[in-house]
Length: 437
Image (cartoon, rainbow, N blue to C red; front, top):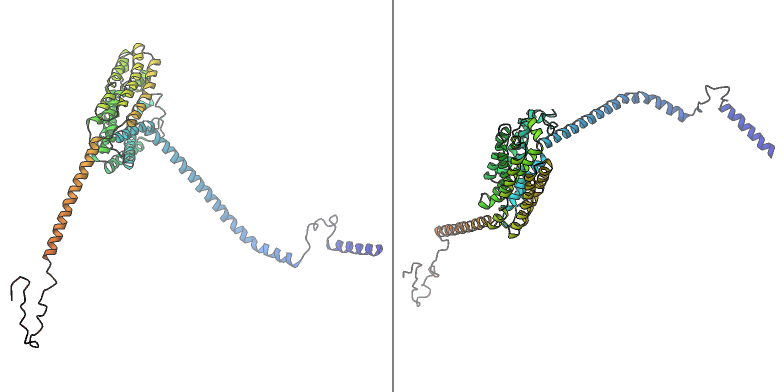
C-alpha cells in the first residue's frame, strides 16, 4: 500500500512538471499562467477595453483640472469677500457706529409709551447704523493724507492702499442712501431728516473744520447728541422738552472725553495737521478746566429727568452720583494736568456713558405725550368710524326706501262674485290708502 501511494505521488509530480515548467530552466515562462478558455476570453476582453481606458484618461485629467480651477476660483472669491468685508468694517468704524446705534436705540425706548415697538426699534437701529457707517467712511475719504501721517491711523484701509478712494466713496454713498430711505420708510420723515442732516454735519462740516479751528470739538459734540433725538423722533414722531435729557448728557460728556483724548494724543494730532484745543495749552490747565466745567453742567440732568417726568426719582440720585464721580476725575486733572490724570478721566468717561444710559432705561417712565397722542388718535378713529357707520346706515335706509314694494295689497275676495249668494250683502273694501271704495 505504501508503494502504491508512492507510485501515485510520482505520477502526480511528473504531471506537474509537464504543466508547470521548471523556473531554473525556463525563466521566461516561469510566471506564465496555465492557459484556459476563461483566461483567454478575459485576456481578449482586456485587450479590447484598452483603447477605451486610454480614451477616458484625458477626460479624467480635464475634469480634475476643472475642479482645481473651480477650487482656486472659490478660494479667490472667499479671499476677496474676506478682504472687502474687513475693509468695510474698518471704514465704518464699527465700534464707534455701535455706540451711536446704542444712543439712538435708547432714545427710541425713552420716546415710546408703555409698549416698545420691537420691529420699529430694529429698523431704527439698522438705519442709524448705515448712516453712521456712511459718515465715518466719508470722514476717512476726506482725511487720507492726514491719516497717513498719524501712527494711530496709518494702517487704515485707505492710507494703507487696501481699497481705493472711489470704492470707499461708493460704499459710503450706497449705505447712506439706504439707511436714510429705511428710516423714512419704517419710521418717519423727521427721523430720516435728522439722520441726513447729521451725516452732512459730520462729513462736510466737522471733518474739514478739524484742520481749521479748535471749535471742531464742540461741533462734533453736536453731531454726537443728535442720534438720541433721532431715536425719540422715530418712536413718537415729534420732539419735546424731555427728549433733550440724553442729547444734553451726550453733548456735555463728549467735551471732557475728547479733551482728555486730545491731550493724550497731542503729538499725533499735531503730526496729522489737526487743530485741537490742547495745542495752544502746553500746560494742560485750560484743557482741564474746560473738562471740569462741562462735568458740572451734567450734575442737574438727573433732577431734570425726574422733574420733567422722564424717569423716577431714583434716577436723579444715581445720575448725580455718577456725574460726581466723573467730576472728581476732572478735578484731579485740573489739580495735576498729567497724562496719568488725563487717562484716568478718559477711562472714567468710558464708564460713565453706559451707566447713565442704563439708569435712564431702567427708571424710565412711559412717554405721556406718546400715550396721549395714541389715546387721542384712538378716540378720533372711533368717532370717525362711528360717523362712517351712521352714514352707511342712513344710505342703506335711503336705498331701502327708494326700492318699489314687491307686495301689492288687494281685496281678499275681489275676484269672487256675489251672484251665487244673492242673499248676502255686497262687501265693502278698504284700500291701502285708507279710503272706502
